[in-house]
Image 1 (cartoon, rainbow, N blue to C red):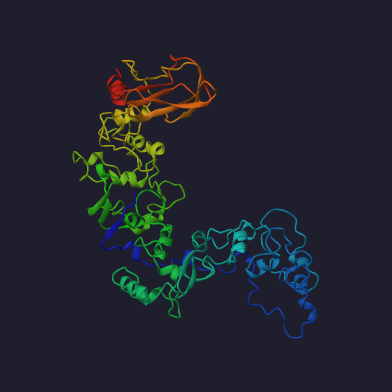
Image 2 (cartoon, rainbow, N blue to C red):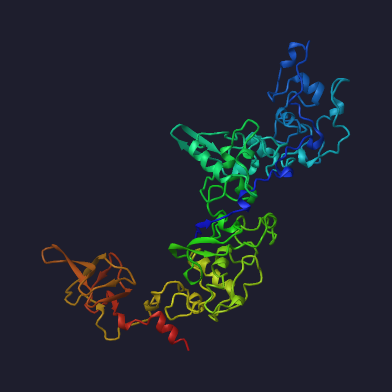
Length: 523
């Protein structure tokens, strides 16, 4: 179930917060200064300084005199990252983050002029190794090297989006003017082809700076350009990409956590218009919207940055089950409004932010609320049963009895079925036999399967006999009555030599022992 929402005002989704501690580049982390701005080739340097024997991006002279690294080994500390890359990005090429002897300490470089800035640091420093994350962007250093991102900056391309978040959703969009790669952590896509005048007019109207809504000009960089990665709404769910990033949601999916509620509905702090039913109409598409209170309408923005159930996922659109009670937010939201409760009983409503509401059996069908949802694990994500109705599909069999006996409790037509085929041919007129067989018939075709309904005189199998003189003849075996194929007693290639042999048994509808009959006979 995906909720398409009409949200009149969305305060949360329109706030652009820099989150300085989150996006800000960290300088000097690990005690190893970046050499990116150093003048490595000063005046009068010998031409031989350019020799780079190990191809790590550092000249042999600098490895010997400044960094203390091995000029014959591109990865001195054996951490899987090139010495040159580590130096360029402010990491220590002599510290692999693990407790083991290094080949050379910075204080043991070959000249008196060696850079020994790190000799007083505490080694090993886990943040310097391949599994370190000095910028706390969620990407370890080894992955940053593979992606080409800066391990000291959580937002390498300065587009306001976390590197790891972008790397999870990198995608290519085709346009008449060429392809655009969105969410590339190395490219902010400033004023890209997707941001044409019409789109810019729409976005500048939306981000008008009124109240808590961000101002369009404030979303630009110092040159007045806007990042497509940041300001677009890639999945068209009503949340701009930078808003999705702040909530930790997927910018390419309307329902990031697949909890059966669109992200925009989960973060709304006003009532929403839904085009999918709730309550007893849960999951049913609607032609006209219904207005309901948003599931977390009373929560403030800070609540969405918390993790109430301690599962590592932020509350709301990032967490399939925000309160950790085993029932997804969408299921609980479906049965959360007292307006939809059959008896208008507020005490019998679910709450996706209340972990204690899974234990009641309000409809007395033998399943508590948690078990009503667990049915979906067997029959599909939207095929849970109602905690308000004893018999969700109104087929005369309670949900608890159906689910316990392997029946689909949301299939209102299965009461007339007999899946265990324990009915029987009471009047004996449903046996398929070759009544005129004289010698031997070989089964060359079986044209039905068990449980299939067939009409009288329908061919259900084919036999081949050998006539005098050796000619072959195919004999159709037909159903003597209309009914369900209960048992098939022949196999392809089998030789049948008796007229009394029953090829199949057909049971008429009135002879079945249906699911509903089984329920009524349970005592």
